[in-house]
Structure formats: structure tokens, C-alpha cells
Image (cartoon, rainbow, N blue to C red; front, side):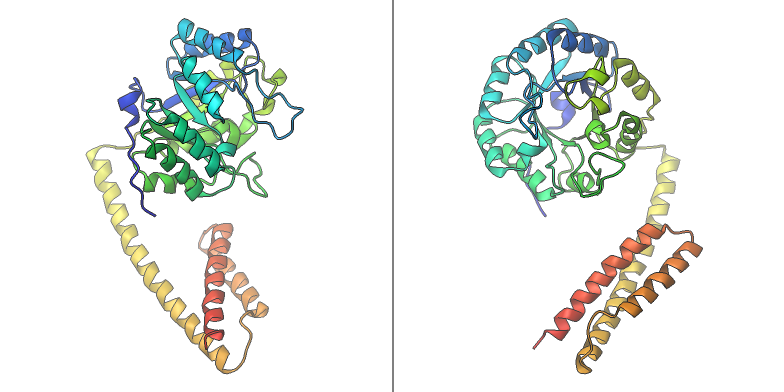
Length: 362
């Protein structure tokens, strides 16, 4: 998968020397007092640079609080005037964008539901053509990297180059203990494809439970995410939206103080040792590839032998023997059984596909 996305580095458009960008604020702007009180508390933490607040809230059902609407934008103006924090708001329609631009919102963000609709993304992109404003793009609800990347490309194609992605987790059938599965491999792959793209983690939406926010935040930092977006409310228990996943300002400060901000690059001795270990991994990986090639060649021979003797592909007795034998061996070697089971299933699926092709080949 290749891309020609042109991203302006975060430090080039955000006046901050901090290695990690911190964004905080309530899930929803509920009233002026709540917004200003939260912003003033957060502004005391010098690490916080951007204040977030939901003005329009896309709810699954119409009987939920769908946001305060345009009056909330006036409150955000006061946040900028009194605290100096930048402001960011979720937009889902062209009208939302127009209202934000009129009221001086600094950064727009596009939510998961909107990112999942290419028609909506294209419509928003067309409205933003020729406008110099940063845009954050959350991942779609479904774990679809191409859909996420496509949303970024649509904005970049109309000239928006102040872009950051927000990893807020993905809907899966069983995401426990989280609200949304982190599926860290997806944002990591996005970073590989677009190396200049800043990726900000939204631990609040991944966790869905304030007790898990710290561990998710630390994991994001350890994976070199460029920032955190965390929901903060003066009275989370009585919040109109997402009460379970919001922190009080004091809880937020405790969380940030407890995080370990690791360095991407260490000393020369560290780099030399790391290079040596990586070279050893390269050798082992090369051996793994050769072993996999030998295994699949044997699968081909088995498939051809089955075809000659008119034997079915799947033989459950043999598959059960493989699982029991390999997992026992894995446990003896100290390997994680779930990891090995996932690997075995991938190999088994590929083996079935290879043999199926052989049996159905004329």
C-alpha cells in the first residue's frame, strides 16, 4: 500500500516544545460554567496545550443529549481568551465547519462515524479546500485501515497538510475489558505507511472506564504515539455523555504525573546494543521465512497426495493433534499459548487454502 500524502510536521504548526501533545476537556460542553471551570483547571497544567469539547454529539439514539450546539462555540471563545489554550471541536457537517470557522475554533476533528462514510468525508473535504486549518481524523468504527487512510487522503488532496490521526479504538464483537479494542497494529501500520503523520491516542474511548485510562495511555506512549486526548469533566458522575470514562481535573493531573515519557533515542552505547540485538532478530527472521517456505512446500505435497487419493482437505483428528502437541511444546518453552494458537490458526488457514487450490485445479 503506497501513498503520496504530504503532511506538515506537528512542530511546524503547533507552537509547542513538548514531545507529547496533551489534549483534554469534557466529552460534551454542557454549560458555560462547566466549560470554563474545566478549562481553567486544565490550563494550570502546563503540559496541556489544547482544550477539547463536544459541541454537536452524534448519538446512537435520538433521546440522548446531542450537544449544546452553536452557543457552546461562544464558551470556547472565552476559554481561549481566559486560558490561552487552543480549542478543538468535532465536526460532521459542512454547517459545523462553517460555524467553527466563524467562531475561531483552532482545530477541527472528524469523528469515527463520519470517517467511516466516504461521501461525508468528500463533502467535508470540498468545504475545507483552500482553508488553512489543522484537522484531526479519528479512526473509523470498524478496523479498516484503508478507510482511515482514505479519509486522510481526501483532506490532503484538497490542500490540508496540517493533519493528525486520532486512535480511539475499534468496534469488535468482544472488546473486553475495553469499550473499543485498541488493535495497536492498525495505527502502527498507518504510521509505517505515512511516517510523517502524527498519531494521537484517545485512551478515554478505548478504555470506556476511567480505571483503564492510565494503562492505555502508558501503552500509547510506549508505542511512540505523538499525543493523548483525554476526557476531563469537573463532575464525571453527572456528565451528560460518557460519564464512566471521564476524569476530574485532579485525577487527570495524577494520571499525567504518573506516566513515563520515554525517549525515542538513547545513548550511543544503547544504540549499539540495540543494533546488535536487531541484527540477531534479522537472522532469526530469515530462518523463520525459510522454515515457513519448507512447511508450505510440504503442504503442497500433502495436497497433491490427497488429490491423487480423493481425500478431503480438513481432517479434524490431525488438526487436534497439532494443536495439543504444539501448545504443549510452546508451554515448555515459555511461549504464550494464545500467541501460538493464533499463529497455528493462520498457518492452518493458509494450508487449507493451498490444498483447496490444488484439489480444485483442473
